[in-house]
Image (tube, one colour):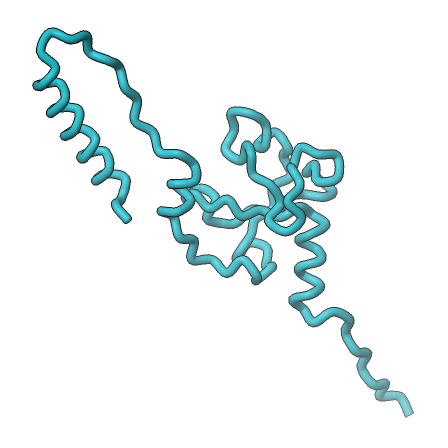
Length: 137
């Protein structure tokens, strides 16, 4: 897949060619943008999203404003239960934060609500732990 810089160069070449062939026609304004799906396809996250370790694979995000319109995590849903983070069940707060991939700033959109992240931690640790045998005699 082409990287972003190459896509921009190709677009500008097309734009230049079309301008020279238009003659006296009115120039149309065009915007160049890549859809979120294309960005997700281009970005391959190297983090293991099945490793539920805070600060290694995921970081806590207690501020629910990041999921509102116009912010970085708008439209992101829980990777496991697929619920919106603005719903009452998944709304992040100080006591029950959401967990986002540490590569979120690079374009990774994997995030878990508090409940799903805790369940993932329990299942990845092997579930219930057996008790140690007592050393008392």
